[in-house]
Image (cartoon, rainbow over all chains, first blue to last red; front, side):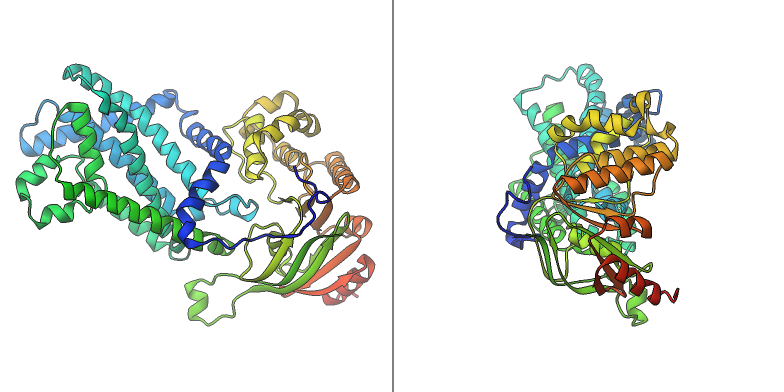
Length: 286
Length: 231
């Protein structure tokens, strides 16, 4: 550690950071605090799973139970379902859960860690990223629940299976950056956190969790509805993961990928910019 | 040699919608202009709500100022809210690593201090047990042991020396004195007049968010008592 006497010059405590560099600053801040992030992930996982008898098995049991419940409801409404439907549904459940949990928890991150922000000068984004990574680890564990379905359907996986964790991570990152856009405002206007919570619940029905991309394009063709639908950032990752794991081919049009990539990049840029500019200013009022 | 300078520093608290609608004057700290020197112990006193803790957080880089400039030489560490960030399900050892990382220390630095923390906290075999099984005194002991194990260049202390039983309080005070004798600068907030008079070289008297006076501890306490109408 540097001693006062070693450093010759006084240096400004707060350096002005360019807003245009916000995505870079975000990555650099979090990489330099990777050890703390690991500790926070372990704390959050332990808090959730050290008590229950079944421990981490809950990360697998929960999506299985949800899948069974949704499959039952779907068969009840539609009357029949494809035999691969439970597996397809489970991918939707896991992906939607990581997206919604990360989005809502990031929106509340500044209020939730208010007491810590009164004594630590660690960048605030570290706490949001640690929550996102906790959700990511849980989602990866949950994927184990899909293995029995893959065996049952005799699916042969190809190299593209390595993209599954990538799609999950991009989905989590999208939720994180959407939350970073709203988190500073949610400190002063708590209604925002409630509204995001509401959106995450309603969004479930507007996302391909219980339905599939084929059902959507089959119903609406390639009209404007499909363009609008692609503004939902989980449509492409969920559909891609299903195609990879169950060998289906949903034929997402090029504009679909374009809208998704554009959406993700936009929320990453604006999320990091808004959080860098506002988060440290609002914590004094917490 | 100056180790920290504050030049015309102002921090205005964000207002709630209610405060804005009622046109309530926003609370603020500053403008504050002051320098801190190497190896000096500075106390901050004032009534509740005078801005002592906020000033300490501005010095510690926890809150950014709205205007003005703070310059620093070396590493600053703030001891406040001992035990904030502890998790009941984690052991004393796990919480030590977590709390020290929250204070900004690296894993290697914590590894080097872990034996010292265990010894100073006197927790013995409890160190490996979840801290939900600890008494509040034990938690406080662990907190202060971690917080004082590291030697920053500038140590900021916010009302954390009064924790634990009488013998541990004595031990904590001695540890802070050792830190002062070591090399660093200490800036502290405490309501313990005896301690402040004994160890401070200078005292800052805060009133309504501004520095009311700075000077010799005895003189500052006289002014403070006048403000409180105790004389």
